[in-house]
Length: 104
Image (cartoon, rainbow, N blue to C red; front, side):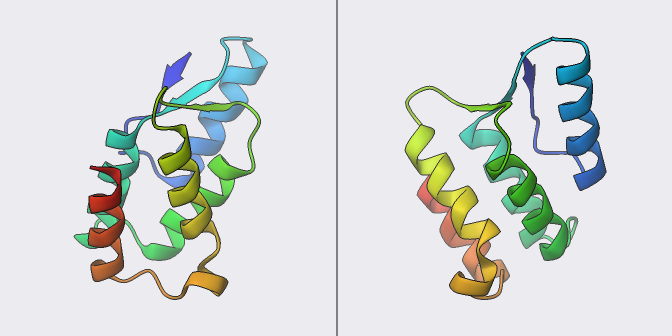
């Protein structure tokens, strides 16, 4: 299993997914901490909202991503909210902070 750190860019997530599948390493692991780190990077302007939305779409739609045990629901709900920006509205710094609090 390969752990996602939260420092990845969208193209790096795609590459990790391909590498994991191609080498039969197994699934990627997404933790609350890694997702919170992505949100913090977006809040600080280090990661554009469009990039975070792209990452969320990739992770949410993937069968080869596992969520941290015991936190599956909050991670899934957060990814859904990020991936559904047309429903949930613009991803602003305030919204990033709210989602980080949800993950805490």
